[in-house]
Image 1 (cartoon, rainbow, N blue to C red):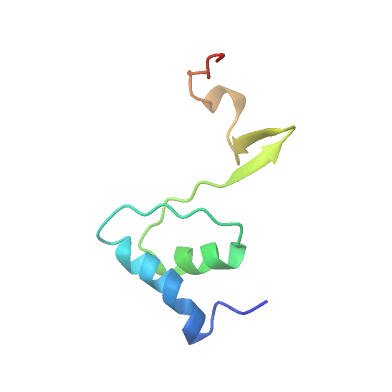
Image 2 (image 1 turned 180 degrees about the vertical axis):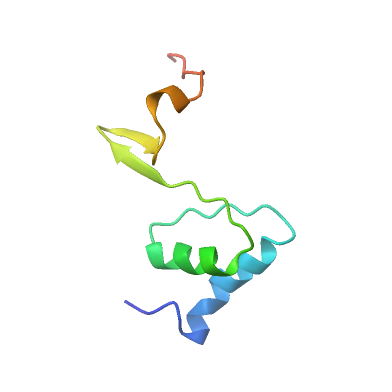
Length: 75
């Protein structure tokens, strides 16, 4: 696996971090290293980590009473 710390591969995360200074950016990634570089260089990023538990996607650290009060209606 290539290291994101090399100058060539730092371009994308640094561009994302720079662009986030002027606009809202949403990054979805399975790469902990990519997210780590963005987190290191972006100014106060708002990170939301998702996890799959019992077949359902949940927000890491969110308790049952913290969940939104909406539900998905049957189709």
